[in-house]
Length: 119
Image (tube, rainbow, N blue to C red; front, side, top):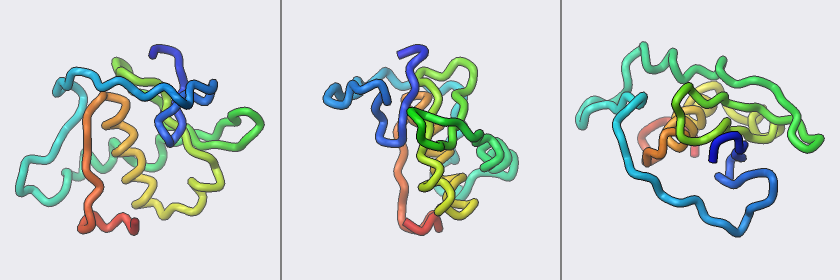
């Protein structure tokens, strides 16, 4: 919903914890997906999802890091607790940003073993 904030679990922090997120029709706007067989995204895509897009905020008295939704995104800003963010390596932050961008645009994604994200 427009204006709502989302946490890492995909729920609104306002408390609608029991209400599942409804799937949306998929469209190919604003998401560059690597073609099958191309191991990784290009350098330009890496810069787009850099950890530098995260900003410090406070949510309900808890320090958090927020990834602003891009213009035209179907979902609101994505945020995780600062304590969790601080434990991530820069490449893991990029992986979280990538998954958040997919979620914000109502696209699916797979976090696989060979991505080097240290799951």
